[in-house]
Amino acid sequence: MGIMLAALRAYDLEGSEAIHAARCLRAATHGFGMLEAAGAFQRPEELDQSYELLIHMVISGLRSPRRGARPSG
Image (cartoon, rainbow, N blue to C red; front, top):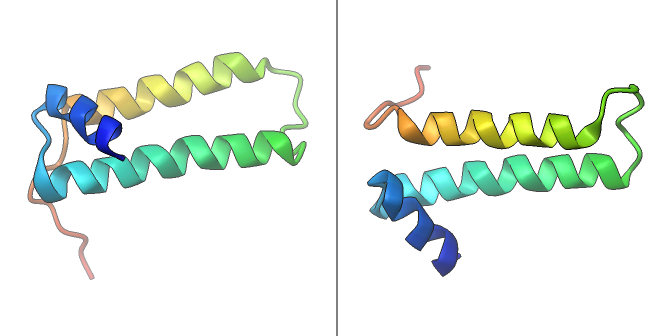
């Protein structure tokens, strides 16, 4: 976790913001890996391209975080 938190400092994320971002990143990559291991990706599209898109989407979110935003409800 320390390495991930250090990397997130490059996006000006520290403290609680970094913890939330790390959780999101871990959940996204872990979920993808678990689905792949379970053979859940049945479509012919290349998995590497899907994973690259996932990482691109996560990094884009890190570049424009919703700081201070709280879920409504």
